[in-house]
Length: 70
Image (cartoon, rainbow, N blue to C red; front, side, top):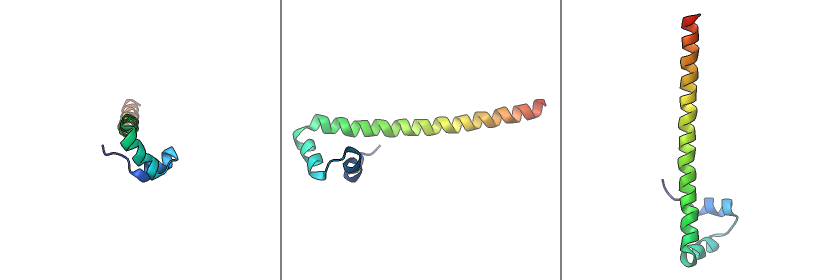
């Protein structure tokens, strides 16, 4: 899990690079919270992708089982 790019933060938070650098220097807890939030978001996204894959596999298994039973 890497930190988001400054460009990504700029667009998502609608602030400029100078503001981000100021936050990093003057408000480190706020900046760290933002970075950790993005990491959590990335983890959740990966978990969601895994769940979607599992759902497809289960649906396929159900289909095959129904086909065998019929």
